[in-house]
Length: 170
Image 1 (tube, helix red, strand yellow):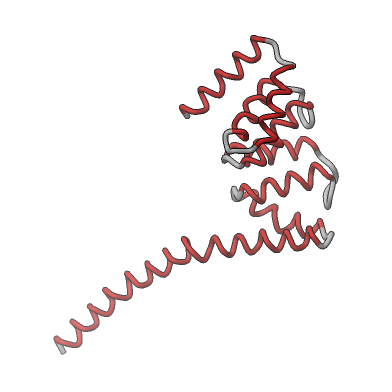
Image 2: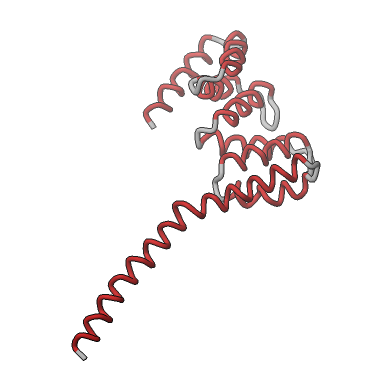
């Protein structure tokens, strides 16, 4: 009987870590794949012209912080595909993804701010976001940033450079 209790304790000791490892495996390997599957389903719907389904696939992912889904959702709002065109909502989703470091979102956010789409024109903010996108090796944001800089006052340029410097420290 003593051997049976010892074997049961060993079995329970093995089961707990195994169950824990299963949960860890799910959270680190399988769950991100499931999320990406939803994103890919949204892409398939978008490519097929079913913008409403794409929106329904991407919205929960975007709300959970998936930067790719945030950019995709912003694009739907910018284009008015599957949802009424809403530049302010596009700007909102681009900003969330840009703050997470998404280069395309940084570029689009900078462009929206430079043109005053979805918010009042903000050349300082545009310069900052375009600079951050350019740091990720993108050529077009660098060209766009130069164009924005040419329209800025020396005071605005100093402010933008100070914001960029502060961004590095955060």
